[in-house]
Length: 203
Image 1 (cartoon, rainbow, N blue to C red):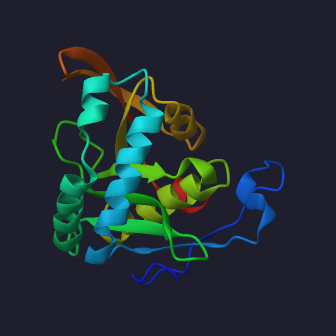
Image 2: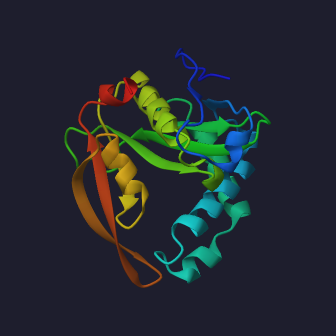
């Protein structure tokens, strides 16, 4: 299924030069707008991704406290509220299981002139990483922002997150850093920005 916002369907095929367990099957990933009933699956993936990505980076107390049921309600509300200014998209495998998601909307602080859109979150099941799905989720998110009148965007990530290299490869420029606190531990976030998201739409 494609993105039902007037865009062509985004499809993500496994890379021929990177072998993964899922490469043994013919897999076609579809990206579509999330609906309220997707919230539990999004929340589970969100929690699982935090625990796998941030183990050894974010304090264990924070990771241990994550609750998929609580996050499901948050995601349900975000999906229902995203119809006008924001968006939540999910990536589905051939069995219609959710393997990734991206959300975004207007830049939330107003502190970064020239960057009007923002990707709030993007996560992908570990098994599917390296297949090009993350790139397609970013591209689909950029398309949604473009449809809502945004020609630029930024995304925040923990500086120690391996995904920072991914954003740089997609052309994201480092535009800011800030310190945040989690369980009395100081962590650094980096903002990556695209002045013209057309470069993402063309990839």
